[in-house]
Amino acid sequence: MSEILDVIIVGAGSAGLSALREVRKHTDRFVIINDGPWGTICARVGCMPSKALIEAANAFHRRNTFEEFGIRGSDQLTMDIPAVLQRVRRLRDDFVASTVKTTDDLGKRAISGRARLLAPDRLEVNGEELRAHKIIIATGSRPIVPASWNSLGGRLLTTDILFEQKTLPAHMAVIGMGSIGAEMAQALSRLGIKVVAFGGNQVAGLTDPKVMSVATDLLESEFPLHLGTKAELNLVDQGVQVRAGSTEVVVDCVLAALGRRPNIDNLGLETLGVPLDQHGMPSVNPSTMQVADLPIFLAGDANDQAPLLHEAADEGYIAGLNVMRSDPLCFTRRTPLAIIFTDPNIAIVGSRFQALDPAKTLIGEVHFDRQGRARVGQRNKGIQRIYADAESGRLLGAEMCAPAGDHMAHLLALAIDQSLTVQQLLRLPFYHPVLEEGLRTALRALSTQLPIVNKFDLSMCGTFNAEALD
Image 1: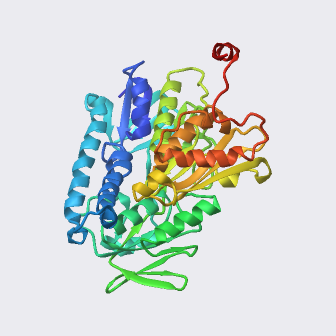
Image 2: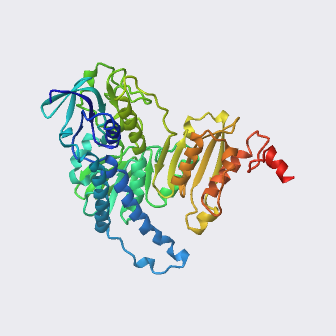
């Protein structure tokens, strides 16, 4: 291709497709290059197939509450894991197909191949050199697997291949208790697999010690959980031997859940003429997605800033807008929000506990063991901790392991984004009976600590309304 293109997009995941939607509004002089299967990480191996597996596991797990509800015969239920995995793949294929449609009509402008940068305005793919005024790098990520673990062969799984299995073995170890590890360890255990899990000092990214303690206890009530000691793996006749401190167990296979690594190796970033960190990553402006002052934009999992779908989509959107401008626009990013789909949900909103100054922060807390709606639904477990500025009462953040935590986290993210105070959020409607009444309990605990004269849960009438009521 001899012409100079307006834009080259490298990567057709969430960030790349989001960028493509913006670029197509302004020019047809572009190409999008993708190495490997087309379709987003989320749809193929991440968010969606994992949630399909989790939903099946939770549905089966609910049988443990049937006796309390007066439903008999739960001990006769069985789990057909091959059927579960078949449904996961059927749903997965549908999700992937919907993302692939975005590039179906591009013809020669959609190129399958591995790209390598030659300069800030040039790259090579499939032996051909392409030039463009602007380039977006959105090459995604892949599971982290220590090189020594590759000797385990088929006894080592990652989420990239977990959902391709026709069935699953009776005994598994999950290594890593970040968001992926916590979700999958619980789901696999609830499917009836004997699971043992190993991780570092945190679970699912939690930093609040009280929330961490509750989350750890709840997970340990379902499967053995060993934290704080590095796991070592060895192939033995019976399977895989896992050692961590004084703990030793032999399992049929291991699920590596150590996080994901940006796909930037052999990409040619060293040709850009800017400093790279110890991982080979250039500095990226999170408000513009631009690398230094170059015509290069690095978005999504590839920049390793916030490997979440909604963040990747935002970054692709920002990059897609800015490649069509001479002066990049600077965007304020959304309130941080992370949700882990364990049961109860684990969620982190806004500022994390460890990032706050204890001298300037107040904390409101609620336990769900006595919360009304949670009790009637046999979901009465978990904790929520909300943080507010000690002087103004402005909401700062929250960490929780709570029923319906995914929904309450969204409410809090909206409130934090709007800079609401504890009292302002308390003055919004709370229906009865709902799990959000637990959120109100935590807010009221905060309210009692605040040096505010007007602590009413309702807004006071203005002058006009007050006169009308006289």
